[in-house]
Image (cartoon, rainbow, N blue to C red; front, side, top):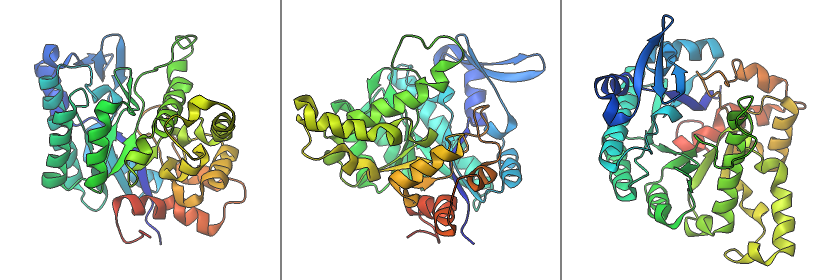
Amino acid sequence: MVQRIDLHSHVIPQNFLDAIAAEPARFQSNVEQRGGRRFIVRGSHAVPLDPAFFDADAKVEKMDRLGLDISVLSVGPPAYCYWLPPEAGLAAARLVNDGIAAMAARHPTRLQGMATLPMQDPDAAIAELERTKREHGFRMVETGTSIEGELLAAERFRPVLRTIEQLGMSLFTHPYQCVAHGGMDDYYLRNFIGYPLDTTIMVAHLIFSGALDDCPGLRIVLPHAGGFVPYQIGRFDHGFEVRPEAKRHISKHPTEYRRRFWYDSLAHLPQSVRHLVDTMGADRVVIGTDCPFDMADFDPLASLEQVPGLTDEEREWIHGRSAAALIGGPDAG
């Protein structure tokens, strides 16, 4: 049976929590007890610390309840630390990466690590990327869709993207702030709309800037079912045909880049996942739970069974074959 692999599973390792509790000013965050619960706090933003964030045993217990075999651990956005000065940002990334590696080492057949990088300093990001590959054997790396408002397609991040490609690693891009402003402050819309929108903006810039042509072997995983990309990619094509701005850096239609990306299944609507599979191919769709955040899919396998007309072959690709092609494993290919 194909192993069921979750490529969107967050952690905030205990060693990093200990570090920010000891030096809150350095990391511009803190760990606080509120009403009998522990939170990681930055400014007015407080995230409750479910044990699955920092306890490898709790993570695996949750996976068992969800019917998952493997989770690739990516740090939660509260620990990206792009807002820190470069020295502190590098220290934070090293702490997080070593903490993730320690969690994975506790359950090596169930957990794999994914690197985080101090993207505010691209040279340090490359050095840390190479270290995690060398010391921890990580096969994936996570970045934000933007870095303190600067999009991933920016020229100064291009060496980082090229290094990820050269190392044969896969890139998981996850939003952490809402680049677009206006109408987002109420109803938690910065997450409901802002996160998928940030992913869509990032993808458009990666395509139209020529960044994907510069890194032809780079494999990119998108959370939240690809944002709005699978449902608006045709609009990109129409714009390419009628607007000269869209042809400035590329010579082919945006839809020809759509399979440069992998998309998790976290759409919260079966019909949307059906459209995603039909548009991008089942071999480009992976399980993504977003656990243990409250916006997670708390029963991902059952959610997939609600997708109209899902075939056995499509199910195998989504359950694990697509992910195995990114991280390696017996189901790759």
